[in-house]
Image (cartoon, rainbow, N blue to C red; front, side):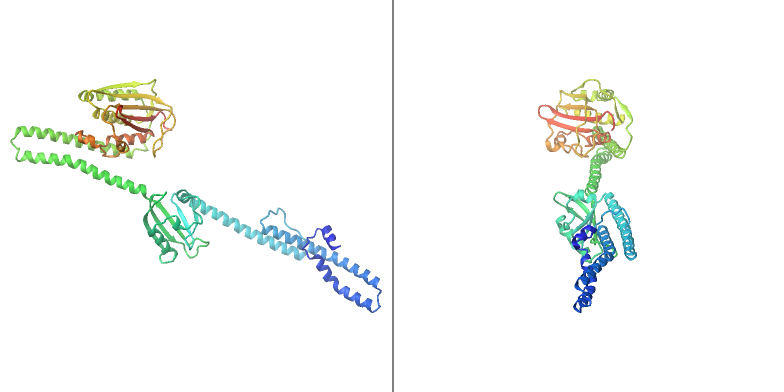
Length: 473
């Protein structure tokens, strides 16, 4: 009966409605049982009256039980973060007060949760904008959080891993333990991260303040200083090489001046020979200083706008005319081949003239006697990708300069554009050079978002191919 009634009234199975009705009706049952046993009331009358009392209690308790059930369901839905579009309205005054109190608490904590979530997302967004990797550690050294840079460097699965599984470097792990064990509030060091990372890293490990909340107790900042150290070394090597290259001719000139002032003071033949050598050394120094200044100027002008419309064909003609006498003295024949109509390109006219002059001058200098130096110009659909450099997209002009000189070894090919680098074979052949021509060419090509490729074989000699984009995109 009670089950059917509860189903009919929409009450839950575990609403305890039946129990409440029975308990409330129990005193009446005792009274009627006593009256029946004393023959004051007949059993039939007692049963009838008891049934009436049960129904009365049922209808008295139903509104309260139903509203308590509604209130319980409402609270459960709030606890389970289910959407409640309407406010709960109850007819019982006390039940409504409870519902209003629950609504007030829910609004307060919802507001707090939304504010906390917004702040957390904002903090995470700030961390993700930082270019350097950031890691957060718990008291056991486990990684509890990180930014995008850290995930890019160390992998997407680093959350939950222990820091010593990421960097297995004793000096680093010891510094982390000092901070986690409160031996030190912060530690800074430089170490080499091996394996797939393979970088020189400066790190700063800091203990979070006492008022910080959450599992994180320390923060690690990582800074990749590999490029900075490499650049510093390059600059140091550059200064050392420049000093060395200048010191040699200066020593020669100083030595000859001292000789001319003393032992060869009145020797006309020696004076003429020494003056020729001194002029040669002075010309070499002037050329070296000019190249150093050009290289420095190019490195500082990488952001300079490229707005000239350069006619490659005319530029090649100007360069070959200037080098004709040099080619004649080296018994080299210059040949120019153009495939189709060559478009004008966007660039710096002076820089392009310089790169073509440097490459063509090198081709003549290192060519075999009685051979040809050829220049092939054509338009290509795109520039081949460069190693570690950005190249412009779209059509480009290709200038391939070939000579029939000695084959360049594979180990030398990758170093040709290094500052002051000269192959041993050229030193043995007593061919003078500053070792800066190809470095200058490289800087100009980088400025124009182009590319330079070099191939060298025994039967076909060496070919330097310059790719310059038609439009700077």
